[in-house]
Length: 159
Image (tube, rainbow, N blue to C red; front, side, top):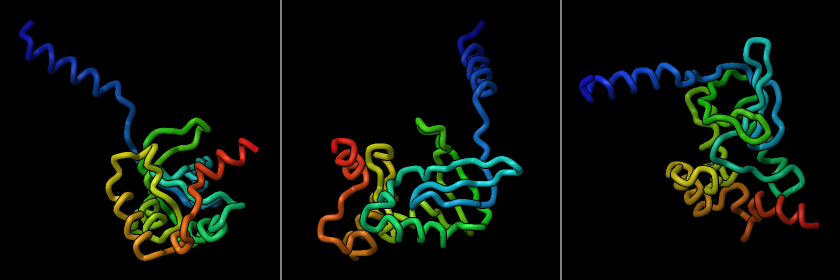
């Protein structure tokens, strides 16, 4: 069998076995915090963790405001979630789009969440949005040295 034909056959077979990358569309029915929501897809509830960002915890400075900002952006609305897989808790990781706006990016742009560099190191748009929010002292960046949620969680576990 010629090499090119063999490669073409292999690539065709591999793509046929790949899982579909269909976005989820549904109505937001619950906001857990500034980076997690529940989506109603048909009759099934799907927990979604906004990919590439980390919002303040509920009992952390700006935690409530971050949750409120996410609720204002998506609660009760139909959104599209472009999946990036699942996290260790079984939540769908994804870009959330509502009314043409990327909610993940808006949360960072408005100072309601951090760019989660550890899990999205190549997300240049999130990095840029965070730099702009910091420079403009928006949201959580009004504080001189806001504590990132991953450090807050680590300190809480160590207590």
